[in-house]
Each structure stands twice: as structure tokens, then as C-alpha cells.
Amino acid sequence: MATIDITKLRKEFGDDGEQIVAVDDFNLTIRDGEFLVFVGPSGCGKTTTLRCIAGLEDVTSGTIEFDGRDVTDQRARERDVAMVFQNYALYPHMTVRKNIAFPLRLSTKQSSAEIDEQVEDVADLLGIGTLLEQKPRELSGGQQQRVALGRAIIRDPEVFLMDEPLSNLDAKLRSKMRTELQELQSELDVTTAYVTHDQTEAMAMGDRIAVLNGGELQQVGTASEVYRSPTNEFVASFIGSPSINLFTAEVSGTTLSGPGGFEYTLEDGSLVTGRESVRMGIRPEDMRLEAGGAVPSTVTVVEQMGNENFLYAEMGDIDITARIESVMNPEEGTDVEFGFDESDLYLFDVNTSEALKTKTGETDVAYEKYIGETT
Ligand code: ATP
Image (tube, rainbow, N blue to C red; front, side, top):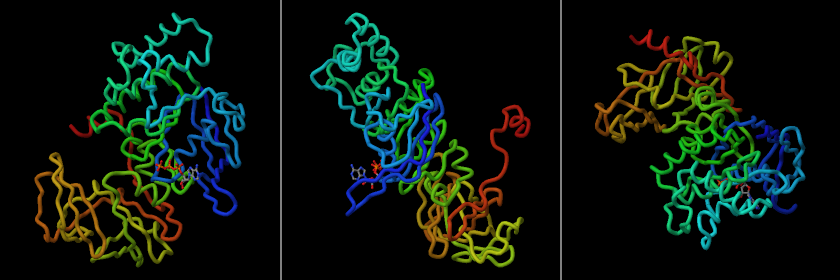
């Protein structure tokens, strides 16, 4: 186990002619035993950051420390990290037993019997104890992924680094493996950095989530923190599915006016004092159908999800989405109005896109208190 400190990390690719800054001014501490997920759109620098931690990329500048030990110039094999990639890269001609044992045979002088015992322990932990004599091609995708994990676990590393390890699996297996991986990580208590472009996966798995964009770290926090209190418009729009509704509103006193006749008077006008306009955000789950509500719109499509419906509509030239009850199925072209609570409203600076207001209200309500309030 290790605490990982990344300080002022920068990674450029290419020569002087055409330089790509893949990671810039990146500062982050991954805590001992933590499951930290890097998430962000394609090309934002997730894999590069992970490869720098692994020692597979030379950094342009900055430092990486494991437990206060500077490893920046150490090569991958000197760092005691184990990586699991999207592409499992199992050896096709070797049995599961030999695939899992491979790192030990390379790096230790243990006897075959000792190695066998460890392979069997790891295989049992992963529920593949009966598959040890099979070859990879005889296994399902999920089983192959477990073998790849086994090969990482058997090294008993200080750090696990995982790059989209579940993306080759179908949706159901992926969700099962998510839970399994989380349980396994918490059981082994090994510091883990995990890359995904899927915000749902990030939210579900990470102790904390690091949101990246354009090579820069935007925010680090728990799922609840990045969802409720995004530092800027990018994080607000990247986290949450369907995405938050965002539009620009003009400020007049304490009243905000937006496209298509949107009008809302803030209870707390101090939030917009001295501003001519502001970016507004309302999450689809915070919109409720309400006669006279501030969001007038015209229905374009309703998608039925079974347990709820996603309503897509137009408010002037802005597309908006609302999550509504499954019994509500208004036809295309229907004019509807939505209301929301000010405590759920997000406001962002029009120029810097930094958050001016995020969700307010209590979080982590104790069960007893919750039950007391709802009964
Ligand atoms: P994805 O989710 O698509 O894998 P990512 O967030 O992991 O994306 P990176 O692979 O880290 O992004 O890439 C960050 C940027 O660095 C991109 O612009 C990419 O084109 C560039 N890049 C990555 N590796 C190299 C390389 N070896 N040579 C040149 N440019 C590279």
C-alpha cells in the first residue's frame, strides 16, 4: 500500500514543431488504500496520467512520490505497481494457472509448489479456481478479465493501476464486475487508480473521483461532491446522466430571464448582484411539471424507461431534458411548464464558468432522522 503524491505533473508529446500537452499542472494525492477514479472525455489525459504513475512514460516536469519516496525517474519495474488494461493480453498458449503464475516466475525465486499455492489462493478469491487448467480461448470475457486481475493481484503490489479494464464486457457483466472489483479492492486494501470515460462507472466505483478535461484536473471529490458541488460548468455537465440543462439568463435585479420566456425571481438575489448575465443549470431530475413554473417548453420526444420517463423539450432555442413519472406521457407538441426548487439550482460565471451557486441542503442524513421525517 502507498500514498501517491503527484505534484505539478506535466507531460508533453511530440517535438518542438507540433507539441501536445497531454497533462498540465496536475496536483493530486491518492490516499493510502483509496480507490480513485480518473474520469473525463476522450483525449483528456487519463491514460497518460496513469502511465506516468506506472513509470511507462517519462514526465516532462513535476514529481511522483510513493509514500514520500520520489519515483519520478524510476522505471516501471522498479515501482511495485501492477496494471490491468482494457485489453487483457493473456498468453493464449498458456493455461490460466500459468498465466496467473507468470509474474511470480519472472520476479521471484519461489518453488513451483509455493507458486502453485499462491495461484490457487488468488484463483479462489476471484472465483476461477476450477478453471486453472483451461486456456484463455475457452473462457468467457468476464473469466478472462478475472485471470488478468489475478495476474495483477498475485504480485501483491503497492499500487494497482487499471485502464478501462471492464470496457470489453457486456453491460450486465460489466456491472457485476464493477461490484466484484470494488469488493476485491476493499478486501486487498491496495491503493488503486482506475481510468474510465464512463461517469456512471466512476460514480459507482470511486471512493473519490478525479474529473479531467483538456489535460487539467478540474475537481477531486466523492460522487456526491462532484454531483452536488461541481467547481465549474464542465464538471456539472460531465457528471450526471442525462446531463444537466444549461443556458444563459439575463439578470435584472433579482430576476433571471432566459430563452423561450424563461423567468425566475431568486429568493437570494445576492447571488447575482452586479452581474448582467449568468449561466444557469438545472438537473433533469430536479425539474417537475408545474403549471405556471419558470420553464415553459414544448415537448419533442418522450422516452419511456419503465420506472420513469425522459421528456425532451424545447425552451426557445434550447433543448432541455426532464425526468418525469412514468405515468406522464405528453404528446409531441404539447406545451408544458416546469418548476424547480432554488436549493437545486446551479449558477455559473458566464466568463470563467466557475460555480457561483450549487445545490444546497443536507446530505448524508442519518437513517433514524430520515425515517423520523418520512413517517
Ligand atoms: P481516451 O479515453 O480516448 O483513452 P485519454 O483521456 O486516456 O483518452 P490520453 O490517451 O491520455 O487521453 O491522451 C491525451 C492526449 O495526449 C491526446 O491528445 C492524445 O492524442 C495525446 N497522446 C497520448 N499518447 C500520445 C503519444 N504517444 N504520442 C503523441 N500524443 C499522444
